[in-house]
Length: 119
Image (tube, rainbow, N blue to C red; front, top):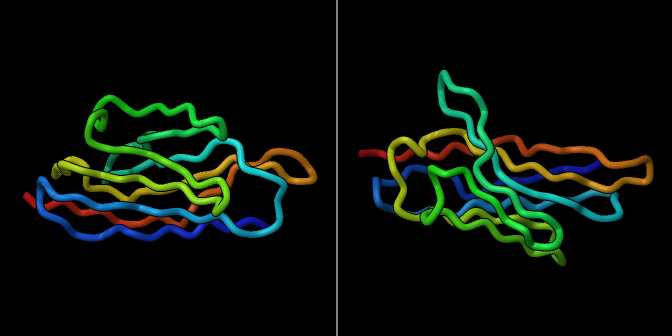
């Protein structure tokens, strides 16, 4: 079984910064893509940032220039550095990982961490 453990959410004022972390543990061969989704109240879950095992990165337009995704493959960990936070960034943030298992490839999700940006 694979677990994703998130940390780093919290309350911050507009213009502030937070860093989210998500570490994968368990029994698996390797991890392909990792990334972050978020879901605000009353809205659909949206992809925030994505990074492949080879380091290819993509962001949703609303966070470009403010958020930075990175990963440490040795630690099976993905990070999301969030700067210049805005109230509209308030959401529950979920990490995910596309994991290579003996039985094939499966997606796993973290439990979610709340990010609240006050104006």
